[in-house]
Amino acid sequence: MADKLTASRRSWNMSRIRARDTKPEIAVRRYLHRKGLRYRLHRADLPGKPDLVFAKQRACVFVHGCFWHGCTMCVDGIREVKSNQTYWPPKVAANKERDAKHQRTLQQLGWTVLSIWECEVANEERLEALFRALRGHRQHRHA
Image 1 (spheres, rainbow, N blue to C red):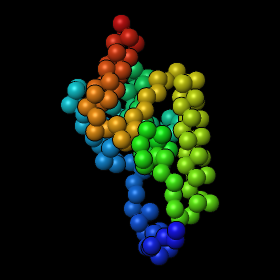
Image 2 (image 1 turned 45 degrees about the vertical axis):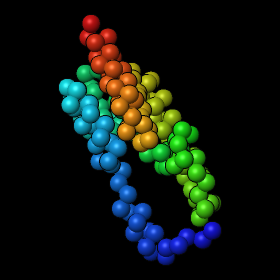
Image 3 (image 1 turned 180 degrees about the vertical axis):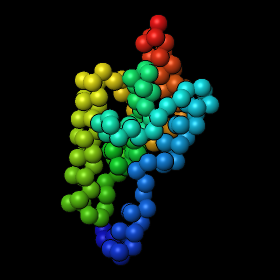
Image 4 (image 1 turned 60 degrees about the vertical axis):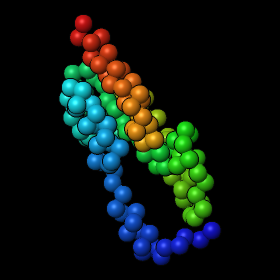
């Protein structure tokens, strides 16, 4: 199926999609901040520029967009695109490969890497599990 938008309009729409400060990322940040955790954002000196960095605990969190990173738990990640099929599947596959590479590199550098998917952000239990993992990691590292 052909794209309903012109190429210039599609390009404009895509240029407005943010890589940082997305709604899911802000929701995770607010939740963790409310729980008392403090962090740095998008440290450029770390592989993949993690969304949230807990330096003292050597832990970081990536908030993955379901479509962009190929979430297998929701329709946004597994939906087959109907336009530009020569571009999107390889693009998402490359994103997933790059995510795995960054995670391996961070782990080799001694960092704990946690991820949360966009579709999980609305789930209070998933956010609480992320908080517990970070809090437990903090207590373990400084015990």
